[in-house]
Length: 251
Image 1: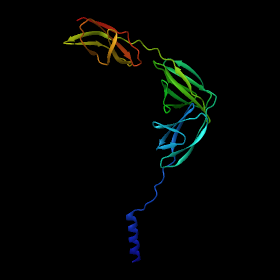
Image 2 (image 1 turned 60 degrees about the horizontal axis):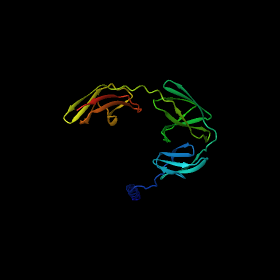
Image 3 (image 1 turned 60 degrees about the vertical axis):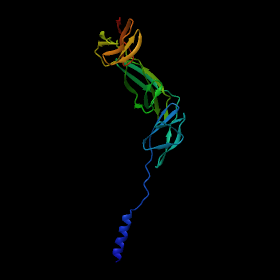
């Protein structure tokens, strides 16, 4: 009877389930970047809250030029102490050498470097890549600029900006066989063209005023009651334009 009673109790226990406290999440895993006086932080695993930082979009930010330590907590998880080095007075020394479509950049003064491409004056703190003392960069038909930050032990340099000389943009070819046809109250411009890798669009002008763009080889306008000069230009992906081809329409 005692054995039967024991089995019955075990069955009741397991049928109800054994409740245990859930295991807390692990320590936070974060990435930290310093660019000048500003320190950026983002989580690589789960939601976190770093002490003394301000949330911006999907990352955190703090203005602090000196070295400092802080606590970062993973939500519903554990805490971790993190430290960031400060700025040093030493700057990155760099020299740029050009070779046709590429540039070789020599960096000196630090152990490692972070290279960040610039979009105008804007910078994405997570776009940077770690480089050693020498790197090669592709040149473009427009000027490309970068920030480089050096790191030695736990110290960082102030960011140094440099720009690569732009390649000479090839002459943009004009359209060929520009003509028009009239149908009722519409006028249709049409032309021929062989696009290359730099082609972006055609620009249509009416009496020297831009009235539209297209990637097609025909453009519709309303027929005018007076003589009108139309011009078609070719625009490249870098904003360069051809001289243009003109045609005159007389009602």
